[in-house]
Amino acid sequence: MSPRAAAARYVAFLRAINVGGHTVKMDRLRGEFEALRFRDVATFIASGNVLFSAGATADPATLESTIERRLHKALGYEVATFVRSPEELAALVRDEPWPDRDPGTTLWTGFVKSAIDADVRDRLRALCSEVEDVDARGRHVYWLRRRLEMAVLRTGAKIDKALGGPVTFRNVTTVRKLAAMMSDRGT
Image 1 (tube, rainbow, N blue to C red):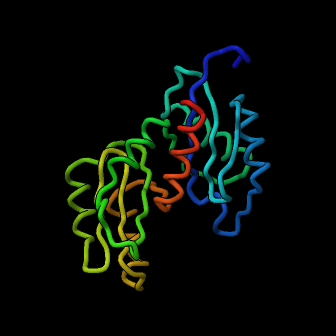
Image 2 (image 1 turned 90 degrees about the horizontal axis):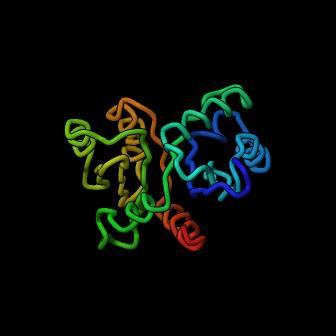
């Protein structure tokens, strides 16, 4: 991408970049994104959140597969990648369910590749209990935890199974901060 080419800002949410015995330093991760000719690359906390600029006409699905191929080649293992635009993050924060939830709860946002259909949404909602709620909108899963118990810890695997594909979760506080960072850049 030439320095004068129009660019759009994105954030990539990487699944399991630093788990299972794998450790990737954030400077190396930034280098891998820069090698793809992305600009303005920055990482946010060491949990696989990468902000970057790409061509204004870039397709998020194409960006995801490009990043996944690069990371697989560079790191030797698969890293599921979920790309979102500033507009998508702003909508995700604006439209989050349970806006009046108790301050003692924890809300996690899960990122998936494609829109969740009604059957999958029903399977996710079936996971709700007195200690947690699960819902989905578009390409996002929302997981509200009222308290942490062993049953809640097992729900993550059940969500993966219900979705039938990869998902990566971030605390809503992290998502809000990323949305604000992208908004502050005027994108």
